[in-house]
Length: 305
Ligand SMILES: Nc1ncnc2c1ncn2[C@@H]1O[C@H](COP(=O)(O)OP(=O)(O)OP(=O)(O)O)[C@@H](O)[C@H]1O
Image (cartoon, rainbow, N blue to C red; front, side, top):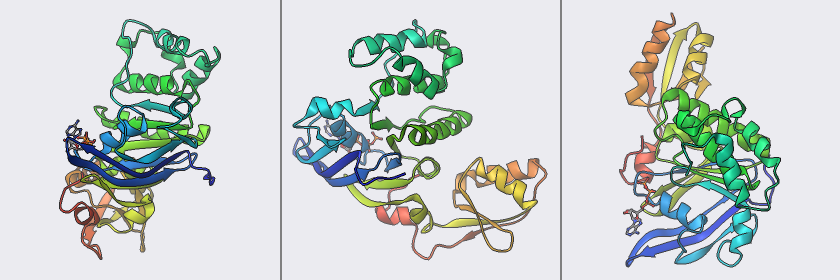
């Protein structure tokens, strides 16, 4: 999946606003086809970093390359490789999905006419594309926004808090959709979130940002391995696994146990879900981490959900 040519390179990025150092020496790299999480508490600096990547504000120092092109010195060439939805996608509610896309495609003469049908298929909106956007669910609007961002065949897609405001079913759908999209199009997707569970389920690798600095960059698997977990003993185990997997990342432990992350506010709900489905939950216990809670530690006491 990964090749050695990065799709996005952020190197020693800093930003000072009104004498205050908002972003401090941030570096990370995205490879083709990977979903990369940008995780940090509110105010950590995610949006500011993204605004620099998309060229809305300029860095104080450091470089950003998209598809090998420098955002500062080769702006137009760099932007050709980028698709992004930073705030809510700008859509005309009284136009149909098709008309919205057609409107944006007309603004860029390099987009061939048949690309519209391609992106509509990619985001799975074929059935509803001739309905007015005002009748779309939030998830459908998000997907239309992504279709718009994909019109120019970018190498990199940036999504700022893509599941904000979605219900649990919509969140699950969006997550699967983003993963599929990255795989099918060999697209690098940068997903920012303040939700640890979101990033865990969606991303291959993650950069954790706190107070303007990237504290860790690692694969999700490695980060998970460092966290407190919950050990479940439930029967039938395969059904328990299937149900829990709809909610979180599940691995199999010794003696027919299942292991999930420790996610206290949701635990009773998961338990209830199992019981309601006729699963016998015989045991549920936390396994203390060998280290202090990684995230509390790396963020200096700030909490991440
Ligand atoms: N134009 C500005 N002037 C002054 N301070 C700013 C400006 N833009 C951002 N900041 C500050 O920089 C810090 C990082 O903000 P940023 O919006 O990048 O965080 P974030 O991680 O995206 O959080 P959120 O999810 O809440 O947007 C915050 O403390 C914010 O108050």
